[in-house]
Image (tube, rainbow, N blue to C red):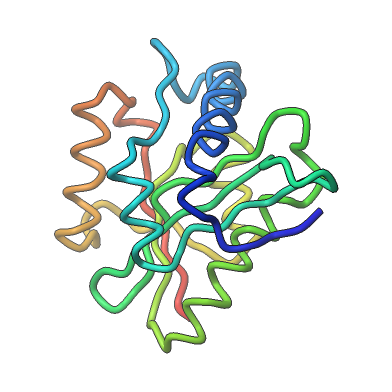
Length: 167
């Protein structure tokens, strides 16, 4: 398996991975409703920031991805998914490590993300990577706005958390 910088030609494959991974989230109770994937605008934001990475199998097929952008002297991971057929093989760890390494190269202060508090492959996984949950009273305006937007989209407020890691 290879982790590489994504190209614009990877967008459709990235969305296919995201839609497949949605069902893993649904089974964990983290999401409901129709499956959704990132828009071209969201993927382009990650791409334009040089923070869109894909994992591929030996044939070159995209089997996972991680995308982020720079804000407030940190990298914010907007989305990370691994196709269900490839989960639990360390791909998420490799993808997130790639983003962390890139953030360190850029001398950014922190890495942030929002995620589900309860799904074992979300907040508990990120904690193993060195991220910590940010208490609601300690949220930056940016993280607060992101969580509020996720709640307006229908994600459960009791499940959503922001996490951070100092680099």
